[in-house]
Image (tube, rainbow, N blue to C red; front, top):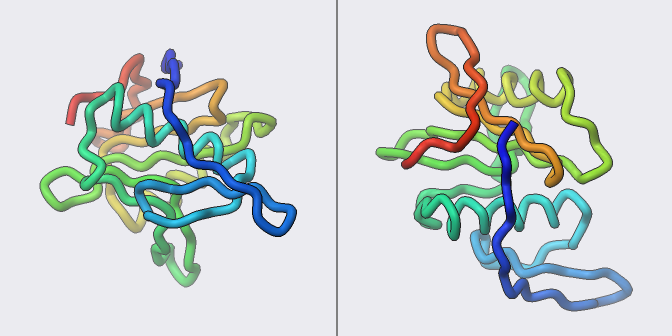
Length: 143
């Protein structure tokens, strides 16, 4: 399991029409502040501030084609113009289990990524995929 301490960040939050919104700096837009979005925004800041992944190499909430279905991933980090790592974010109350990992692996059929992370903000797990084998990591790799 990864030990993650989310960095301090001055998130821009506002209330509009009885909904809380948070400004997503990656997408440059206001989005509804759901429990999952809170995890996603904190994990993005961890990638940028702690792991020093360039924000320009991070893609958030994009649609991909998985077989006949259109799906949306949470976060993908690129390296040398190719998808390199996918992060699936869940709200705090969602357990990280086999179903969550299988969801990321389905997305990986379309992306062919070497690393994946699943997190609910409290627990985070990272894996390296090599020769169809999964190796759990204790830290995220340098980009």
